[in-house]
Amino acid sequence: MGAGCGYCEEHMIRNLLFDWSGTVADDLPSVLRAVNGMLRASGREELTRAEFRTRFRLPYTDFFKEMLPGIPLERLQQLYLEHFPHAHEGVTLLPHAAEFIRYAAATGRRMVVLSSAPTPHVEAQAVALGVRDAFEVMRCGVIDKRDEIHALLADLDMRPEETAFIGDMRHDIDAGKAAGVLSIATCTGYESAETLLTSEPDLLVRDLSRLPELLGGWHVKEAVFPIATVGALIMNGAGEMLLIRTHKWSHRWGIPGGKIKRGESCEAALIREIMEETALTLRDIEFVMVQDCIEPPEFQRSAHFLLLNYIAKSAEVAPNVVLNEEAQVFQWLPLAEALKIDLNIPTRVLIDECVRRGLLD
Image (tube, rainbow, N blue to C red; front, side, top):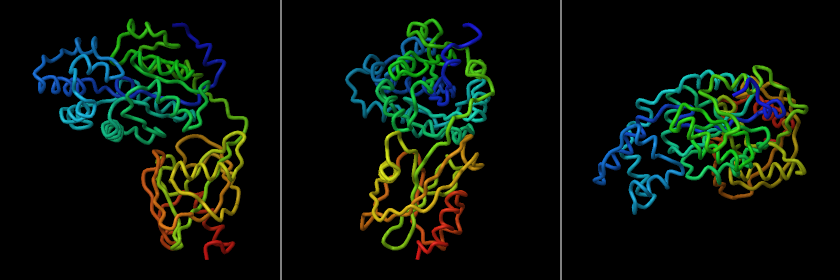
């Protein structure tokens, strides 16, 4: 490979999608142990490491149709979990993965995991390896990434031309090409360089150590404009406010919301974001303030937001909050209790302004 990347010079890669197994984490011994346990339980011959690397492929449903034909998918998934060692037992970060993740975070890239591995395994491994907070979302248990990647980009409002997908298998490369993102193959995992090249990745690297140079080094061109977002302090019939906790804001409590899409009014964006993040509908929506949020110290990456803050009521008599993957937990709290918990700074500023204006009486 040459010293530069024409694609990277023409486009600023702001978003990084990572495969997990063989790209970030070395879980091959545990995966092989689980697969051999499944084979053994079915009376079939176990695979050597070399045989497994030669025969394993994604989508994994194709692999198991060959190895264990006739077993329903749900049963296969159950057997895999039964034979897999403890979720993070023996799993390590691959060489240079930690350094590259630190580089990506320091240069303001958004990072997401798109993996076929089961969600409980990836989450537990990421926590144990100390990298969970680096990733905005972990979308795991995916059978066919070629289909899922489109929805992921849309859900997170990521532009394909500003996004790269890093993986260690042809299926990852094919998924990247299907979505029109930069496909980067790394030779640290399940398939060899020769095999990876048959899918014609945009970039092929020995490991992740070369990527900072290829992605423009430590300089990141700033966005021309701040990012406009909407969020609401949502009240229920008991006078309690909805607060959510997310790793994006250093696990502090805040309000739900998100980015305004091009061509979308602010209020329409608010209604959409709240429905996506909480499954709630809003009524009595009232604009409160704009916050100029420049390089918020609590946020997971470098950013400049214009926060358009509202107060609203839940339209449901008995609100049933259903969080999407962007938040980890929620609670309804009265004002006095809300002020005692670890709020992120913009949320505390919004609540203080609502109190000052008598909007929480």
